[in-house]
Length: 366
Ligand code: F6R
Image (cartoon, rainbow, N blue to C red; front, top):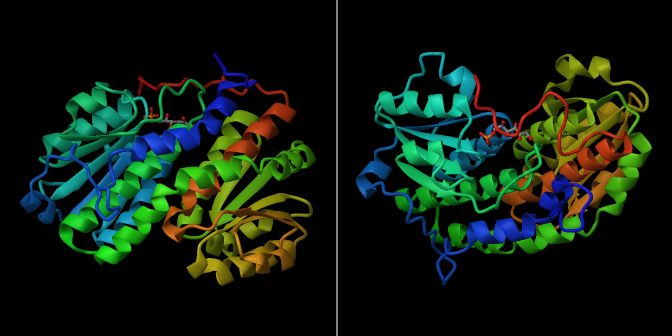
């Protein structure tokens, strides 16, 4: 049942190219210039009437929501807030009929996410659900559903659900941009073109596992680690750090790289592993400075950058390249080495990868 892999997590990591392709299937026009989301039943007037977007979810799904915020704000120019469902539901949220609420849940059964959905609808907001399970509670109660086609996810640590949730976020953002005319047709076509080839690039990343395995072997005894990034890379850093904590029990902190000097830099000591994400072209120079900051404290830095950005080799100890793509889509590729890093760290530490201590796959209690 594990298809020859040692763990469900590794199998599911390797299923990502297939899952990404399935989630995109039928959702891009033949000419490659339009997003087709027939599942969204909003009228053109309703779409044009949206004043703000509120994304809510838990854990990894929340991290997908963070990517959604950056992407929707950039492509649709609407204000987007993201909140953890267990916070959102109890804080008397400011939402009304002009707010579009997006809930993200692999299982569609997470108690806090479901409660947040109900609260949003009670206040008159329209709710779009991104979920992986057909006819789940979240799917049944939402106004519109965007299914992710990841297939069943068995491992407690979410991997293919996350990357397909990212695809759903890109499709939703591009769909809103198209319907609200906030992005030139050429730009939509360009991003869709890149999206169509993302699964093949995900496969390339998977085929380059050796350096990650090597890094995991070298550093699996670490007690503390840091993930740093800016913009979309920061959102991915949070997911990489959660994955590592969850299955290897190594303490990990994700930091917006520009925040380091506001306190956390005090924790950077000799040989501490720092995973620096530097895939965002527009923030690249800033990230290079941040890497210098941690190198000056003798941290061991492994950097992730987009192919061609060799400059980072001058500052980091090791560099792992992801295939070139549009910078908004980088998270799909960047997270894969981080999933593999968490996996191999956990394996070298002898952890029960598919069933980490204290955790359940579906959190149906509050
Ligand atoms: C982490 C993980 C959890 C889930 C969270 C939400 O690897 O899997 O953080 O993402 O419990 O679950 P869903 O998406 O089912 O609502």
